[in-house]
Length: 419
Image (tube, rainbow, N blue to C red; front, side):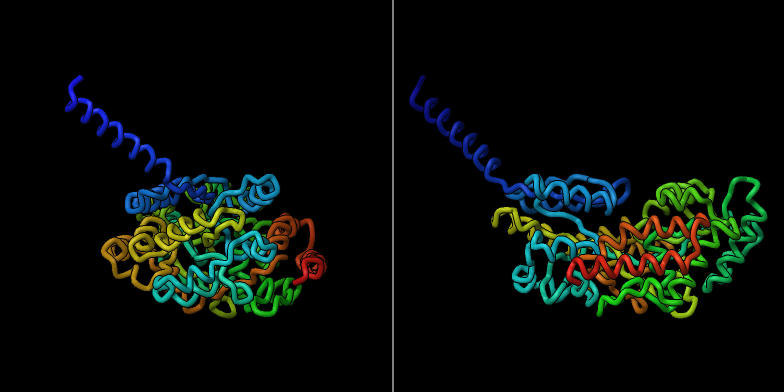
């Protein structure tokens, strides 16, 4: 073999080893999330764009189910040393992990990041507990009211029908049920937990005071809201019991054209629009006594158990996900709130606002939107609220009795957790 050929082979081998070394040197960030279907596709595009701009970082996403599933799996993974590096955490539940020092305090990262000046006030506030920043919002939302325009028309109702009070919503649901119930169509979907929280707030109350952590589950306006919600199923029979025991079934029924009115997160807009097209109409949540809605969704946190280099890489991804470009693309694909002040002006967001009626509804709700309690015991309360709601909606217990018992249990849990 000639000296020249030896030189070429050696150069090629060095280039190959350099490439392999570079690939092996990429920092891997294991990322657990809760997005599937339309939202999952949008997330994967954001990750692909980030990796293209940051070839030294490999984000490995894993869908682990809904928010409840994620909390349960994370609780099991932590003692087994199988936790991810970055994780989506619903904004009322991350306190469980932050207060137990499982999450990294992101304050130094955020303080050094120019991005912080571009975030809306609510987006900066909801990730903070006791002055420390534990998550940066990614998918922020409010509940909204959806209805199927075709179903309303077939029931003889106008798409301009006012649906601002509990009475107006119930009247419309009764009409749909009376006219179309024989076809297997329900007037309204049983409200999911996020919508229930919103309906309580629209009745001028709260489940837990977000500033003082006072438990308000047994206050008169809270009880009244649950009584009304439960009556949709057990008394007026305009909502199916299937949606009470399995919220996914309720959502599927609306998508299948089997429910006229439904209340859910604006974050489900993208999937609903894709399925129902022009028949999907979006309205604000009812303002029964006041106009007030909860801010929901989740933020991305970083596990304290991950190596510093991985934490640095994870925060770089978090910062990118909240950037104007990534956030605008996410908003346009899903309907989740823009969290970055610059996002709505970008072409992809402008096009969405012009071409997708209703996608602006959560933005319009922001003047009435409020963050919620996020102390350690809130996770327990939310997990146990489901069975309390089911007992009310299925007519097994009266709302006042069930909620008074639940309030006392929650107070005991609060004291046990030290909140």
